[in-house]
View 1 (cartoon, rainbow, N blue to C red):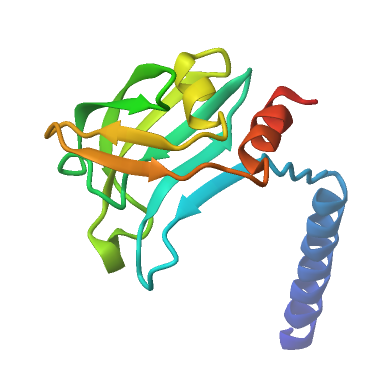
View 2: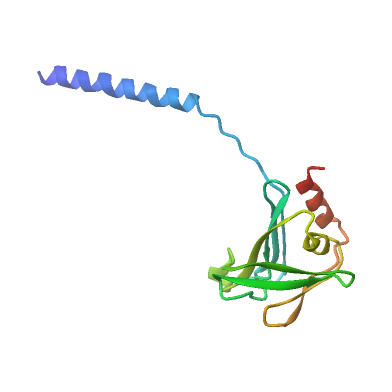
Length: 160
């Protein structure tokens, strides 16, 4: 009797194991790498000034100003002004803790904008960019980009 029960359990386990293999064979995994851009100080344990990633349908997710601290990080609405010297635009979003906040305590503006938004032209123009924080403090966000990495990022988001 014991041998028969053990044999029956073995058959059931083998059948279930083969079902799992079949299920795995029906799953197709796909991974897409979206263009990502980050600018941060070379200081040790510093937070990013800009994080940007291509979102869906011609949009860019922005995470701005963690190095300076934007808001309290509690999801409250915040806005900053970006300025390239030639153009100025406002960015509205919410304040969130940065991915590095455990180390830095940084908070940043998080927003999603379209590729045709004026802030995209300013941030990724390759020029020096300053911001005016919610506390009306003016900070240099980006130096001029002589390497063209910002333009390449936007081109990649546009699929060029």
